[in-house]
Length: 438
Image (cartoon, rainbow, N blue to C red; front, side, top):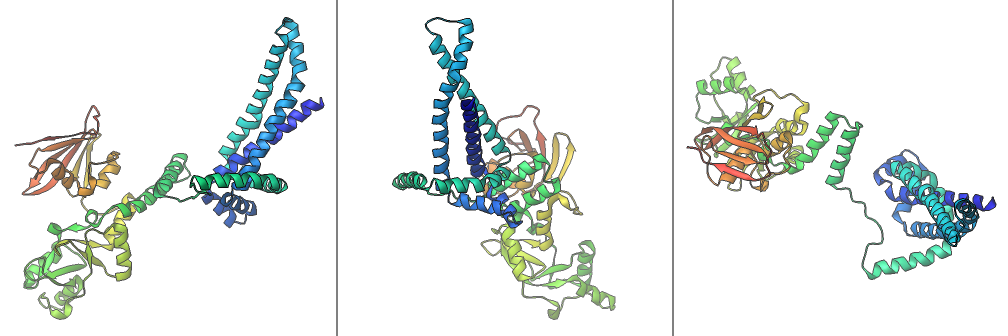
């Protein structure tokens, strides 16, 4: 009976060490730091142990191997008499002793695998931080008690790692992919609300999207010419009630300043004719290169304290205008209601009308398309069509990609105004086909 009690003790300590090994290795540093910041000293101890894990793992392996050896020795001696009696009930031939030994071996191995290995490791994997916090104190005491052996084996291990030029400790660098994976897991579990999930996703998109995906494009910019008369100025304000207007000298690329519409309205309220005076113009304008990401543009707005920026290309040509509201709309996404014409309108379950200037990233999110070919070469859906066809598309030209048909249905001169995106009835591989319409 004492031997059976000894086996039970060995299984208990085997389970304890196996659980400790897995829980401390699997514990997430982010969660441990949160627990430590809330005053959990045991979580802080786990963090310190993770930073220098060599001694701990050396102790664990010494303990587990010692338990395995003792379990084999004690287990065979303890269980063999019982298995011999069982075998004798059905067989008493020359192989009885070997069969008894085999049965005792299988029994003791099964007990250790199930109760000293699988079950404790499953528990430790399910809640690693909780288990690690409970066992860390005892593990530190045992490590200290086995210091001579631990130092010997740990030194040999470190020497081997240095010989092969391998890192001595684990470096936990949290990447964007790691955070996105945690967001996906949180959304799937329900601990992260849908709005929170969308908002965090939009934050990461700010670094991957450039200004052309959020700006008002060049052909949509409404500006005053320095020579505009009162009737023309009033008509532009009535039709496009913006807060600020660019003032140019003959053409958009010759910007001389900007004016607030309220200054024009002040003239009209006084009974004067609307006209542009030099004293009304704001000549210190805010320029941004089109290559900036939305995140970089937000930082620039923070330091410039300007209501809008003129977006220019490498040839100093004006390609668009962007406001802080445009950037915030990109950040908030579907969480806020933006008044105005929608860029994507769903016709039915399998087709959408899409504006040509719609950013590719928005379409990827909507249609759940993982990748567009060479998407660093263009920003918009019209750009994808032009890049793929290697020419300016004509009406009814289309491209098939990843199970969707992208067809130009409204082309104004060289501008692709609108496309019809259709989900094909039979999903195709991620291949590209083109059709040249008449």
